[in-house]
Image 1: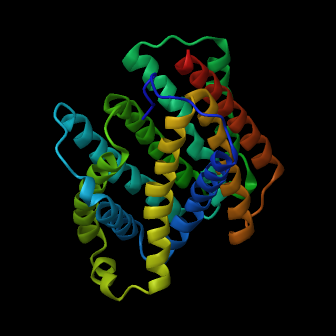
Image 2: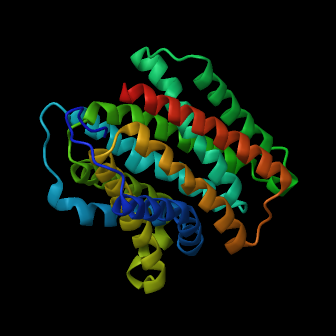
Length: 298
């Protein structure tokens, strides 16, 4: 969803800053909200409901895009279905949400590695160092006593990050397609896949959806509308006004918000090992993100 080179750039002003802050808060709080909704409903049913809301919000933008339907279908199956299955299952088996927030940053180096494989992009020492740092930072979490028993959750988060990376490669084939149209297809395929999967694995939870408490529905709506539609919409708006090199590094505050908010809300410790591993992972992600954005801006 990178803007065309011909898009006119603007000075970075107060309105842009407000959008950046709001976007990071929406994305940073989303992991905590999803964890609460997963525990209140069930992982697959919560994912189905989220995608159904996304489809409802974006349905008016659903249309056939000539030459892009294979990519839109693949993105819908992976981003709308497989990604949320892995993400919500990881949150359902984990207690330390902060550790998952750090592991979720693997999507950035995974995406770069796939770009190298698929598009034959050449990288140099800084981004290689960034990949190594981010991977090492997540590996360190395995040795954190506070993350004992989180191995399955971390593995599922790593899988979700890999799926996200594949989706980021697919999205490069969809430049020029409206964001709402992309998410309408993601919502459509996600609703279909997750609906069938949830009816198979969680029939009681699916049957209980009509009597779902309003506050629980509001949590899922926050993820669907706040994180997905508004968060991604904000990112798209910023990229239409500023270069990739300016915008992309500004998203790095979201996982930091996730880690410390999760620690406060769920009363889980932020240990020295988590801080070291998180700092290494975030430094690696920052290096990869900034260097990739600089390369894209040239």
